[in-house]
Length: 267
Picture (tube, rainbow, N blue to C red):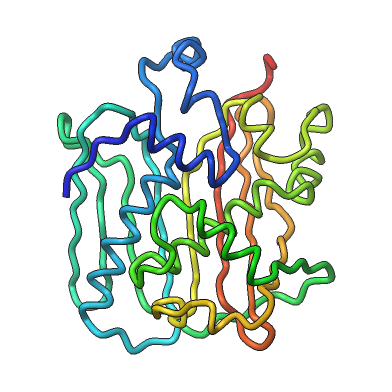
């Protein structure tokens, strides 16, 4: 499968996520950072990876109750540059690589494997989305949330959006960077250079069915876990944030994101 991402792809993801980081839209800003081209958000490129891995999984008639998807992002996915997606399966796991068609370097690699039952952490503070709100979000999703190969990807993207837009997440980050003037982590993305390095999703196989809303009931409950912060201003920080979601009676998904800032000593 060949891909060539454009500014339109970046705009689609931004319209869904609210993340208008200038590295995806402002070429002058990008060149000041030492790069030559705009990049598409890694989460947008991951949608294609998830869809193809899911298609292979569903073709094998999956029988497990839970699965994990994990990705390591190695370098930006540039706009107007050809890429090739390679998918492979050995019977135990399905893997994928997005390769730069010119250099054959791997931009990111992913795998999808079966997993034991998901156990959620007990949280003091929990939020909820009603089904009508979830459907509204799905209409902005840069894909087809009703497609059996994309339904869990939509919920993963939705949890990512809730995680980075929550004031709760920002409050955790300000323990390390108290001078930040922002309302959400999305605002921080536009202020300091941050890249995503890893993404992990643990999800219920119930999301691999056509009618995903029948599993939700009236609400989707979610909670944000305490952020893990490592590093320093001189070396840069590594941030690991996680959000979990459940229906009224059953665990549904956890999404974990690892971010890395550039050194901030001069900022």
